[in-house]
Length: 241
Ligand SMILES: [Zn+2]
Image (cartoon, rainbow, N blue to C red; front, side, top):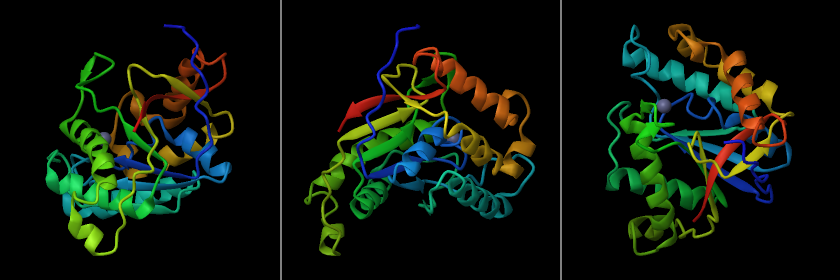
């Protein structure tokens, strides 16, 4: 388990991060995103839902706008100014053509070289069942990367002026049980903590380990660092596109 991992090369200009919910990027990827933004990389967030089903005591009609605002604030704290929402329904995201179409359109607009997603395996580290929203969003995103490059898939987008984009060369999965690369996040960790803390209402409604942003993210970076020479790190499983 202590096999050392290589550093993820940081030689790209545009990243699109696609996740199901507000907070998905803040529980592991955002330290790396802060570091990339410092290096001049443009990062945009695409949220499939507004996380409106995320707080038990809050009606979705109130919760959605609140969590949207918290996500926008969280993004700003790691240097991300563009946050888009697709408005699929929280909790019941389907891996279907509608989702692939929406994500493909975003890829064609943003033209990223790197796409970030979070763990879409059946489980988290073989211990906890993953949510259908995470599974479906990750898998649909990988499919949509292929779709975006083919002008004959969703051709109505091309007819509307969205050129195909086949320039995605790397997919980076945060929260994978089989990471392949590390990003050193000494310079991003404080902002990652601040970014998670921007989800004030959400964290207030949580209990347990995940409610304490500082401890949770510091422990995660320290644990990841065991595979990266002891440096605080964010780990990713990297696929070629
Ligand atoms: Zn989530």
